[in-house]
Length: 381
Image (cartoon, rainbow, N blue to C red):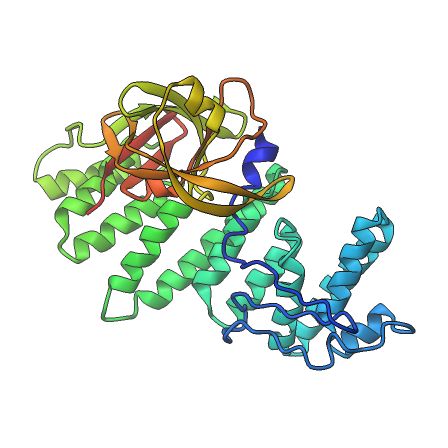
């Protein structure tokens, strides 16, 4: 279950590779660039080089980055894993050397060519985050580490990444706190509460900024979400008491929805059109909710074809699938209408019908309470 869930959508920010196979294996790539350029990678002397007699060191020295990545992919396709792994290690080592020499532009180019395909390589993503952080591009550094976090399994690696992420958020918050305009700081905490909705300190920090901006109702909603969290609950309740001028009491403002633990993830029951139940795995890395068409058919759900397909990244590679539109999707008493979903048949654990993505969750302030195994939802300000 973890395997198929973690592969979804983390590759959404990389556009598709576009390659023209003319004489000499010319390759060009257009995609969001890690160095802040327009995203078009120069190809002069990249695809036209003579491949015979060139080795990996020579390709790297001559900045033939698409070519060496294509060689890496060719070894993978041929089942030559040892050769592919040697090339992978050589690529990442060269990125480190470029970074040490202050050649961040070239390091970014090489790394983004590689990540165009190997978007689940945690070490590569961590290196890319370091490149962003070196340029003080904190938001991209943070987002890239969250991409890496989605593919980590060992607790010690997760702890290491969490420490780095929280450190970067704190560092960036420190920079933004010196600004007279507090809206960038507010936006930072809005984003990280969505990227890591089970980390309660973010919600208290968000509430403090909301209070500073005199948005009392928004602060109250943020604090209510974590009022019973063991890490920050006492602090949240104290802030609520001062805000309301009386001792805190649960006023039921947040919708509380039971969660079903499933390994390191959570399942939640949702209702389509108020009558058909589907069980979805919460995936905050998924930009679009995904439901199996067979589950919709079995539930007797009416949906509308949008005549639009989308490219989805799964653990087994990229797939093209239709985007469907449902009239309504509801959790508890909170509904989004209408809502688009990806219609993909996928192998899941018994009884799991798909993924609950951010195109539903973004309509709410939400907190995944791992102590109580509940999802807390409130209206956004």
